[in-house]
Length: 468
Image (cartoon, rainbow, N blue to C red; front, top):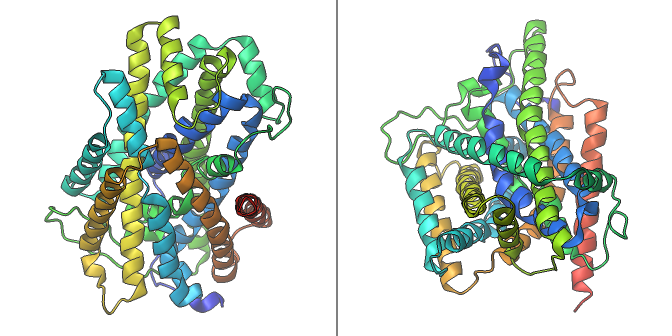
């Protein structure tokens, strides 16, 4: 089975310095900012306190190790994880990933949330056409950029570098020592009258938050594209997607190959592995964890401590804004809402870019005779605009409550993660040479992730089925 991936006669390129490697993880961090970091975990903290925040740290930590296994495969072969999985799971793989990408992510809850915050902050009356305008704007930006990856990276870096420092300074200004004590207790599951899980919590919402403690769902698998199109490792030999209106020549390759087997190449791979672990650890795990903890702490201070009650929407963000305005100035409160709206918009932007990439490549994988790799860029934009049209139809049909849409997608994504974590584990342990495959520690962590996502998914689904 180890010979399932062809071996190249090419050497593995040497990695650049760490500062030049930073980039791909910004996109994945941005994918998590709008769902788990800004909505679900702060929502739970606003209603149940900080005793549940342990779940956020476990969730993003498991995603770090999962993401690294996804990066490992592409770094070594230059092909996306989807191509690798199709080698093992044959005809099942592509249709499965198309279904589990489109269905959970067609619900544009992030755009709805962004539109609602913009409406509240500016005084514009919220209506179903406002989020549709945001979706169309996303399509225009993605269609006009020179290269898809560069457009995503530049867009997410800008939003993160504006939004996160603002959140950090604001939280540090408002928080008191007793609040940090509550946060510390929450990291080990000690809440206000409960341990680990509070009574009355919706397991569907908690499961969705676990899935979104990071990117969530099949979006984690898209990290494979960012490694490939950034030209990391063997990805330097397989090309990248240009935009719809770009005249850039594409030299795309669907299938890659393992680097030439030599002691020098193994040594170079280990150097790559060390540096991309550090890059992902600093940008995705550390920055994501700090942001999630501070946003949840801010929600706790401004809503839960002031008698916040369980709501079925994102009204806790408005409570936060009012409290911030009282403690600072109305301009700061409004700025908080607008920056939150920008972060949500940025997440929806990268969601559509990533899902369209997943859908288009798996379409090609499903039948390379019918769907040519040379047309991958066209397929990408067809799926992009189909999703935008689908989102518009959802809004026009009256599904506009942001939190409901986000939770709905989150539950489906958690179940999806359970399945593909098993698939990635099999791929990396069965097909990669032992010298570059996952260590025993990483294998144990992957098995723990499978049990974690599987256990919560099965429990949540069973709990909801028994209601009927």
